[in-house]
Length: 225
Image (cartoon, rainbow, N blue to C red; front, side, top):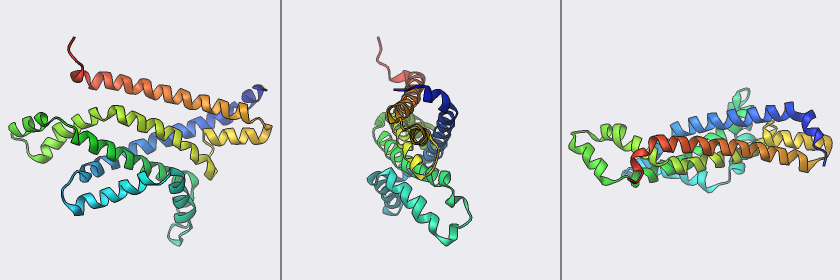
């Protein structure tokens, strides 16, 4: 094993690390914004409202992220309508795939968190004279998002790991950097081991961050001692 190649290749890994972080961060933010109304619509009793939300969640949860990336990058990017636009950029296609995928999983997490809310909190909101939109904005949605933190932390970690498919469409993320280093030096163990360690560092930072958030936003759920 020759780990000296990592010293020579650190700028490439740094570029890949930066690409992975910003793509995952943007995908999670945009995906969360999309997921909240979809999760709320999924709980509607009107077929015209919950039907499209159910179809969206079912498709993107039922198909692999890699297939979705292929459909967007190799499929939609070939249409004449998108010629000369961002749809022909690999990073944009990967970002769209990440956003749609994480939005579907996050919407299902939010739907479950809303359904698991104690009825007493909803009844208290109604007792204060809040309308349904006010109750959603002031009580139901904030409480549900707090309760969804443990499950959402897993989705964030899965998104970090799933972002490794971006390297397949010529994007130099962490996995893509490892492939380039391996092709240059024929050292698969050193190349991919270091990329795996970088993913581990990202994962532990995410776990630490969510534990801090849970400790701050979920104090009221701690048992009395």
